[in-house]
Length: 292
Image (cartoon, rainbow, N blue to C red):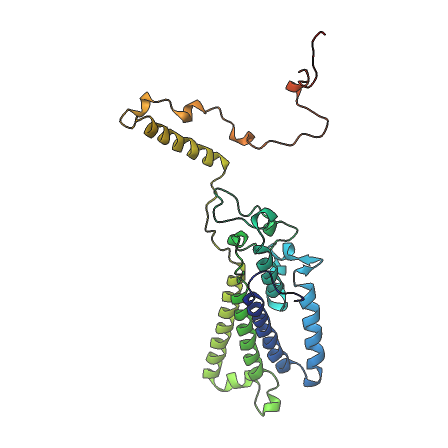
């Protein structure tokens, strides 16, 4: 970071530590499966290639492609150590912008689709699994911290298995298959260890693919108009002291507005120089028509 973040300073440290945790995890795994003289070269190429290609910040694989729901999302989460760091920092920075910027909305916004912001716009596609990320908040966005920690634990556990499964000859040990054939309990232990690995992978995958529940309700314009009419009718009865009268004796606002087309509430902008047909033949009010 070349400057101090707009959000709280803890945002950078939390995401940086989570990324460092993942980097160290891969650094513990590769020495177990590749020759020692090639570890530095392979690790550097791995971090540089996948850290840039699958980070979501560099074309052709952006966050829109990551959140498309295919294999790219899984490859990016597991192989790119910068994926959650970059998205976490970007979402935290834009989440601290004021509402008029188009990135966030306030808690007081009523019946507003919070997914209709630049945060979820296809060009950026930040935090697509968290609809509450569009809420204005300068305390940061920490959705990617827990998946990063679990990925680090899973990779470290995979390194633990690789330590006991690879290069056993250099450890004066027999191959794993020989140990399984010699002792049945060893086979059971291997199955249990593999089941633990599958459980860690499944749980971590669920963490970064689940959709969080929104803390707001978007009812839509039609239901919002109907609810407003019902509220106005109730307030009208209270104002006119008609609460003791039968509802059938009072004009029903819902029936009076039955022909209201809520789908036409959004007015389209007319192109410059063009006017609707009903105004084509009307005189210009700015032109005086009279005799002198």
